[in-house]
Length: 107
Image (tube, rainbow, N blue to C red; front, side, top):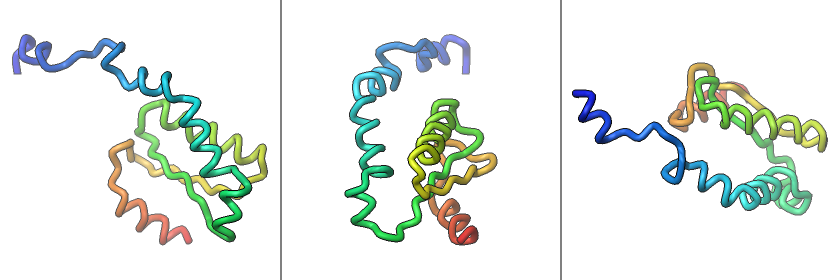
């Protein structure tokens, strides 16, 4: 691929074409959904005894790793029994089937 072909297909500048717009416009909604799914007592009561795992890869973009760390800190502060596991070498496109196989081995 020539440099001109590459430049015609790739835009490395952030901005309106980035997922950042989506995150900034919907961050409160994402925070509310995360709280309701992981920490809300009424939701947790619907699933008594459920083990909740947060799986993330150590080769993921920084914001995914940071989000997992934030959830882990909030779980500790709220004394919630969430479990966390880092998938070594995995990134945000990791296939779920191997992750579930790994999870089955952990249990």
